[in-house]
Structure formats: C-alpha cells, structure tokens
Length: 276
Image (cartoon, rainbow, N blue to C red; front, top):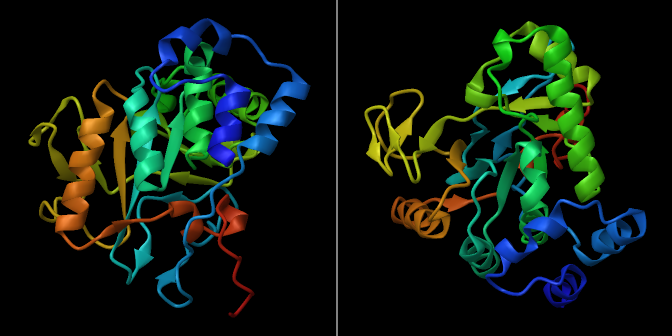
C-alpha cells in the first residue's frame, strides 16, 4: 500500500527514471516534501538479538568514531552503496522484491537530475547518508573546504529527503583529524568505512572485473559483520543479484547496519547504559 501511494505521489512508473531528470532538479517545496515523507514510511529491518553483537563505542577524543566492521556472532553482512552518478531502475525493483536492507552514501551533487531516483531508493528502505558534495580527497583539503563538503551535503540531503545524515563516509576512505572535527560540527556522529569491496561494474586491484576483495587480506570470503562497499553503476541490478548469490552460498544474509550502530553514533540501536 505504501509503495502504491508513493508511486502516485512521485508520479513514477517502472523504468521511467530518465524522464524524471528535469523534474528532480526542482525543489518540490515544503508541502510536497511533507507529503512524500508521510507516504514513504521508513522500513523496519530486523534488529539483532541481544548479546549477539558488540556495539561500536564512542571515541575517547569525543569526535565521531571510525567504524569499518561490526563485531557480531551473527552470520550477517552489511551492504552499502556509494556515489549516485549512474542509476538503474531495475535495481529499485529488485531491492523492493527481495526486501534487502542497504545503506546509501550519496554524493549530493547527484541529487540534481537523479533526485527522484533516490526518493525511490528511500522508499525501498535505504537511508541517505553523507558522502560529500563533489567526492574530493578530503585529506588534501583545507578545513574550510572540508566543512563545506560535509555540511552542504547534509543540508542538501535533509532538504530533499527529510532526514539529516548522521553517518559519513569519506570518498576513497581518505580523512584526517580535521575531517573528524568538522564532521562533528556538521552533525555527523560516526564514520562508516568498509571491510570488503565488490568492484561491481569495474576492475579492482588484484580482484579483476566484478571482483571481490577483503580490505584485511584475510582470504576471499565473508566474515560476520563485514561492511561491503558497492557503487551505483550501470548494470547494478545484475551485479547486486550476483552479490546476493555469493552471500547466500556462504551461509550469510544481508542485515541493516544501522540497527547495529547505537543511536548516539547515528544508528538505531539502543545506547548501552554505563556499565551495562
């Protein structure tokens, strides 16, 4: 029912994303955004069982902690998808059909032209988190430029999708202490990197085309709590089906990483009481 209402509000027909490019570049206005938020209710993904994982902890320096995997006994992996410059309508249908939790790190410059595509992704259950405005190498930028990249991206995503990002992924994984400081000023509560990458639609070092590689070099398979990096690229639906097949073959399942991250760090999991 939600999907039907959302489709009516958005005026989206299956496979019609290119025709929406110009419309997506226009701010729909507060009333329309409010209606969209009501129609596109967030999905509630399965939460982990108590005691099955160790929640990430705040940093001792008070800055957003950097997370690259989740410590858990569950045979789960977390699918995250970056950028947004190429989109695949079939992918939205696949995510809806398979009910797969993913997390999108959106480069906000792509809201113009693909804005309604990511409304559809939000409707399919993917929150929009921060991946900067223009995808620069953050560690090479001045503090002022770093802050603009993060704050302006959060502003744009909040305006378009009704929720301000609280988790940040620096492009290329590049960051420094300044990045963490300015990210906190922009409302970011944690950084989420990755422990493995599926080079979907491209060739990775030592992995080949559509190859898979672990960041720790410990074999080629999955480990419980892996955060997997993918990208919005041409042919994503077929590539995603490939990834889901690998996950199932190895006895794992996709889970929502935000349900394993405490609320104080930008996720949905309850915060632990001191000493608890």
